[in-house]
Length: 218
Image (tube, one colour):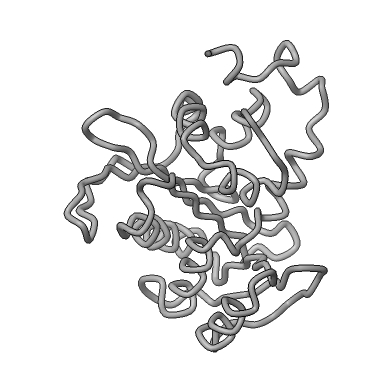
């Protein structure tokens, strides 16, 4: 997928394309610009940097079972946000979804553009529904989600979270995915289990020299 120029609702222009293996420096720089709270909810743990093994996982995607789209600032080439899906091994028609936008670019419509294009890619690859783990920490947000996610199905409940399955509409993202995106914006959506479990399971042998890229590049 070549980079496409997109005009956001506030008039800003961004470029959106598929993530490539050589994008590791973009992720290092973009991660440094996430707030501590965004990092904590993205990874379910406190993190100050990304390891080489984590960067490989995020950037060396197959664009079939694991797709990722990145938004870039055309003025300086810096990363602004990422949307990705990871197909369920036990359910090839389903995939967990994640959207991350750096704090200063939130509420401009960038998340909507990324999710819309990710949904297109998912449909092309035979995915029919997205799943997401939504925190129950905020009862008010949960109430709004229940009203908005009328076409979604609760497939699991665990301590502090509810997992929703949301059908992909034939076109666009529809009301249910739109509501899910707002939950991402409110930091109510937890990291997809495949991402969290993979990162937790990385062993020291997976790391290069045992250090973090951010520390070495600083």
